Image (cartoon, rainbow, N blue to C red; front, top):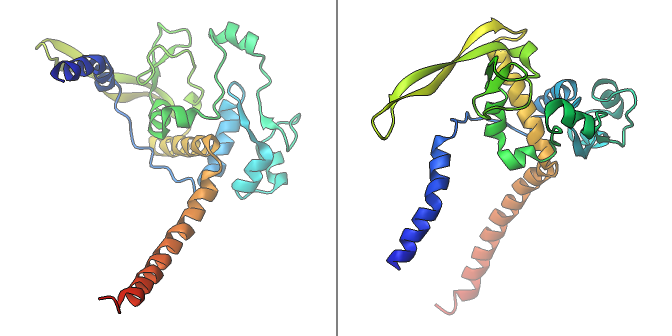
Length: 245
């Protein structure tokens, strides 16, 4: 038994080590019931992401239904001229050409929030920094040597990482990321940009599982039913067993 435990610990040690070395993730603090946030996130996604990344499991008419918009509002604000209201959110860029330009075709983002998590997306989108050694001139503290440009740079501006010296487990000095320092401002303040990223993250979480909006609404009624049923079942139990006891 001891040998089995030791073997399991040795097997998971590399995984635990990698997890401990990962970047610190910030709390996205999203709310998928906030329709205004989802609308702003959808607008940001269409304007900055949909040119390269598709969301091929999401249809435009579903946005109208879930985000509290009319089909006309979706057509005017979230669709390109060639799109139809029943279409999925596809990109016009051929995957073969995209692979040549970026080294790899940009992935579909339909389920990225389910794969990575809201906190990862929220932190990742805010963690681009200047790096002249990279093809696009930027790198990312969460995703090292990322092949994606910082598409939100006009909103965020440019920033650089600031490191601090810490001792590692062997007692050696090592440089550890501390915070970002603004190099040039963007069109939004840091607070406004955080809110934009939060809205975009909120939208991607919704896209990953649109039915969760209805599930959350139904969940409240289910819990209420269980509470009422518990009271009735308890009273019925007392009435049934009163003569026995």
